[in-house]
Length: 353
Image (cartoon, rainbow, N blue to C red; front, side, top):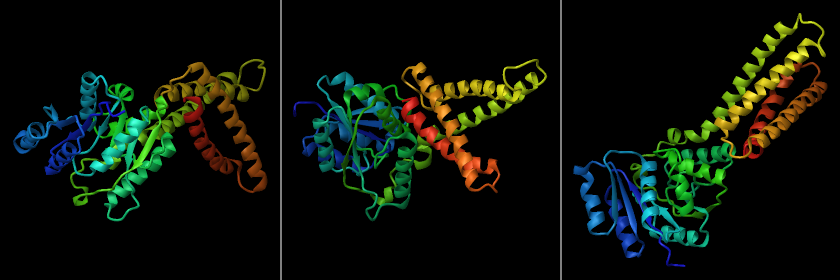
């Protein structure tokens, strides 16, 4: 079991002596090989640290000529490891800023050895005292939003201490994201591929109020929020298209000859069919990026649309009957808002899964 190769990857941009301390501890603990990625650090100011990492501690140093971001650093290290270590079951990533202890790195390694097909996360406890307020807010907010909007529920979305299986690494080489957003996309990809996530609680360490961190909570978590924003835009644009088509068909059919049904009903049905096809296509390709059968997803979407329509009609009827003095349209707004959220979750989990 202990004969597997599990490289330790440390991306570093303008590090300090904490990188050397970590390398010293890794060497003393017998944890190797170690891959350090110099992500475009100024050579005159930081070059000596990377030389020491290579000469004194035996680390392999990969260098970027310019700063290309943590995501690119990890991908380049993944690619190197996949090519060089045939007996590798995965890698462990750790930050260079002193936040990860040798004890926790060993625990992450042991978890990967037991669960070789899972993504292992070293998760911090943000309820502990002494954690910078911006880190508490940024992490807790992102954790909740990712769980609600993306369906990926983890307690620490931004942890840099992770064990990543080799097969998942191959997929991640083509994953979007060159900077910190890559780590968020990695979590989202586990849902797409059905990869289990396992959490290991680790020591929560913040040195000097976490001044060395280059993470930007809002900007670097934007991918999570983008899913819901795109869904809103898709739904609103489909509603606008529906209204425009309804108006157009009413003008065309109003003075037409004998029709099987009233021109308003016929216009409503025709407009809704076209706008629904548009909405389905946008959600399939752009919002949820469906991977299954388009026909199966289309049938599920059609069934969901009918159910939502009936729930809206019966819901408005029911609540308006309870408060008849309130106009129907006023009752319809909260009912449809609730159904909008319900539709989002069903589409994410069932229609485009």
